Image 1 (spheres, helix red, strand yellow):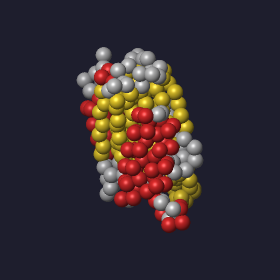
Image 2 (tube, helix red, strand yellow; image 1 turned 135 degrees about the vertical axis):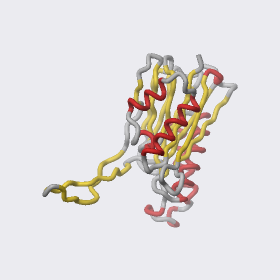
Image 3 (cartoon, one colour; image 1 turned 90 degrees about the horizontal axis):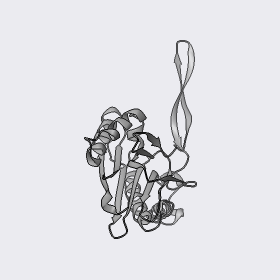
Image 4 (cartoon, rainbow, N blue to C red; image 1 turned 135 degrees about the horizontal axis):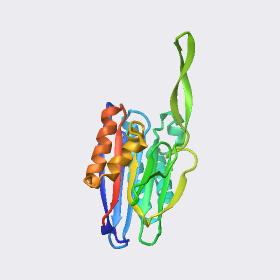
Length: 238
């Protein structure tokens, strides 16, 4: 599986946020045919969230290329810790964090390797046209207020991320790569506002190359929602 058999495309939209706190990185080694990619989503609309996301994505993609996605996520965690320095200088509340997903396509693996934590996702499109969500979200619904509606009480919820670059264990999945047509890595600004069916429609359209597919998904997520939206598409070349 030499590297030239796969094309990559990427795009971002800031949505209605003040700051682009998503980040991504793509690394490849043409000599070995390895391609690594990472998408991170900084938690919060702050400069520090954006910085942590950028540092984590760069570290994760680089380490994934050399080793595997599990090492990539650990490298992101170490880079975040190095950014803050000694823990006594910052309280936990002061430390920005991020969701992450990272993936590796390699000629020495017959499987697609993915590791993640939080709300970033990976989707796999097969040659048959079937779309598979390869990750699951790490979050809990947390009640934040009570609203009275028609004489009753209805709880409003926000999503509390339970695994992040900085907290708890990462999860890894291995999928057969033989019949993979496209791989999508995205932040929740994409998948919160686009259904799996809509994502599949974009990825299945042969007129959309990797770059155009990423542009459509990021723009659509950013236009319909208030969050940052980031999409990285890796496409097999026939």
